[in-house]
Amino acid sequence: MSSTIEEQIASIALMFIPGIGHIWAKKLVDGMGNAADVFRFRKQLPERLPEVNQRLVEALDCPQAFEHAKLEIEFVKKNHIRCLTLADDDYPSRLRECCDGPVVLFLKGNVNLNALHVINIVGTRKATDYGSQICATFLRDLKQLCPDVLVVSGLAYGIDIHAHRESLANDLSTVAVLAHGLDRIYPYVHRKTAVDMLKNGGLLTEYVSGTNPDAHNFVSRNRIVAGMCDATIVVESAKKGGALITADIAESYHRDCFAFPGRINDAYSLGSNQLIRDNKAALLLSAEGLVKALCWDVMINKTSNVQRNLFLDLSEDECKVVKVLQEKGDLQINSLTVLTEMPINKMNALLFNLEMKGVLRVLVGGIYQLLQ
Image (cartoon, rainbow, N blue to C red; front, side, top):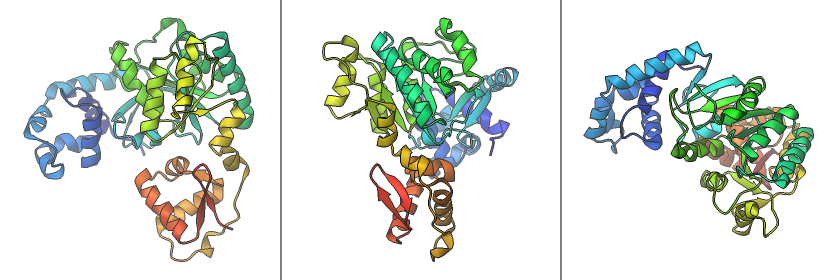
């Protein structure tokens, strides 16, 4: 399902309302069902959402926000950019479950943001030969083990750009999450790579055209990098840096986080080693290790012969989950939410019920398997 122009304009307009941040914008849309109704029924918001006060209701009476939004829609159309709202099927399903997921995203390129396997690779902007070699070897091997994986990063210097270029070299889809609008590429020296990515990947941002790549935007975009993926992989990181922020966010979203170790005296491995030491990231040594840790090898190689009609008293939604497991084999909950287009809280309840009915079981790594 694609959102209407009205919903796109309303979603963009929310971004221009003073005092409304990511969490409140999403809370309003989730509470009312869509962005258009947030504005249409703004005076009724306190009845629907008790946390809403009169000050917020008055702030939503902002014609200037809609004027800005209409101008952005013109820019989007002119430059063949896709505007994805929370109502769009193509909006990243994993990100939709995050409390601070953007109410609108802008995408240029050719990519499925809801691919079955999605990872991000992040690290220092001052990558060493060790870090760049890890990117090359890891993505080469990952292509052989899981050829449909989508690789996400931030187009920055260092590990980010190595991750994108090695993905392209191995014919893997890759997406860059930007900290500015799609009217520019930053850093400019990565423009050719960005253009190459449009054929098998894309450029994604929550920012409207004209937005500068300010420092705080990079921190904010890290939640998108973490939230739209199954796992975060830190290749090299100093004691402080954006990669560590992304790892922390991934942990807050209950997503898997991995880190490649480095020598104890290497400045650009201190952060990676610290993540492993503090049990904030699992030790990663190879592509095979990642595939096994996420149980993707089970998902890729195993099929099930369970027949849905063997089970009695299954709801329509439960049958839908069983059918997906029949067709795809064993899956993690994130993959099930993507394939069934159900919210994760509902999926949790369905999986619990199916387990109690003896329809499926949970394997190591949070993999759900139909019983024979």
